[in-house]
Image (cartoon, rainbow, N blue to C red):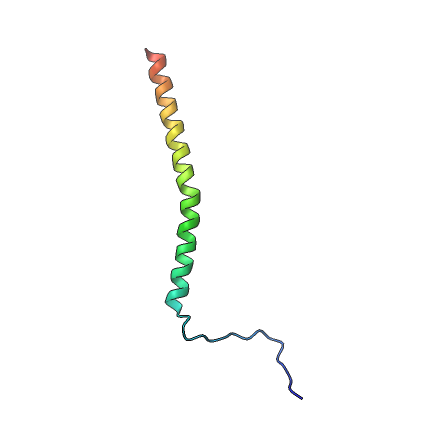
Length: 60
């Protein structure tokens, strides 16, 4: 009868290098930042431009 250990096994895949795992996490972080920061930057730029145009129109 075989006994099994109840702790999770880490599988050591020789094709899964540490640099590949780090690169994958960097890609995920960059993608999330792009999805969050790009719309925020556009919104802030739009609000700033709208405010400046409104101020300019009031001065005229």
